[in-house]
Length: 252
Length: 163
Ligand SMILES: [Zn+2]
Image 1 (tube, each protein chain N blue to C red):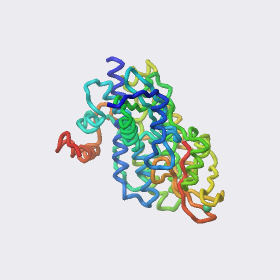
Image 2: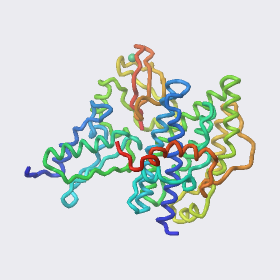
Image 3: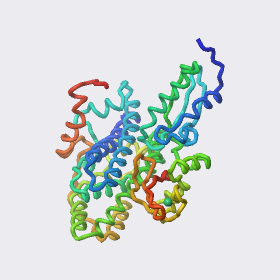
Image 4: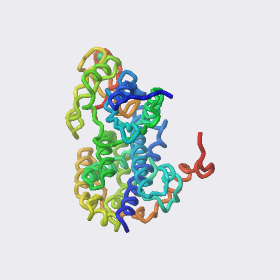
């Protein structure tokens, strides 16, 4: 493995996280519970698509085969996608969506704060841009966690259920495989393992204030770094890639 | 064939006045989107930076830069996108902030207000200057705006978020 190959894979993983979450959140366009939330969730989706574009463009450059970021986004099979399993989970009800946003945005805040120090100048630049946006996403998720958790009996119940249902997908956020380790030694990648304790304490702090509780330890799902996904990703791709597959190189 | 005798400062001045596609009262120079113009060999290389990563105006701004320069006989133009240093609303001049306010958009405070969990910032109503305003939505009609309402004159207005 060369540094270039490893960095390509790393950029793909980060790009896929942004792309698939952007797609998931865009499903809520015109379906938000209130107009303001419709705007909020689609604004977050837009930030994600921008981030995906930057990262996949960089991946295409590293690959050096003349592909564009669109080729990379729309012409890979499911097994070649490496987004976290948490990200491809369905939106569920609003509390479920917020639970996913909370787990993820707190993780991303810690992650991109570290990636900003990466020796890879492009990744560091994208991280410095991303971190400002992530703060906003995190604040949004925390606000709603507090409102729903400390709200009515029904909203509390649903928020706790969302947190419980998704908890088994959070272990994967902190996994390090051979690519991560290789790039960590070169001060390019982030040591995600070292973020776990901090993440847990940040999440716990919010949940306590929201009168919610951190779900109990459970068996953690894994697979995305090897391209093994839940059934949800296939459904996302069949919709997202339909046009490019039915009409390759379509232009309008 | 137009004879071109322009230096990089001339080129900069030609494109500095391009209005932001979403807030046409301020220019790409006012906003700090236009970073630099360089002459590399025989090609003018214009560096721009997006306000937000997904700013949909970047493509349009690139087209306008090329069109304006082409109209002045300059066809060898390259527009490059940079993410670093990351764009901040601190780059907006006082003049740009005044233009925003006149347009009905509350200008951004200093970016230190984006500190996590800081107490809510005071946003002044661009219509009546009241400080009694409240947040309706952190996210507005474009990535760079949030939605507020004035408790005094009862008007709703956009805040250009500090970033
Ligand atoms: Zn007012």
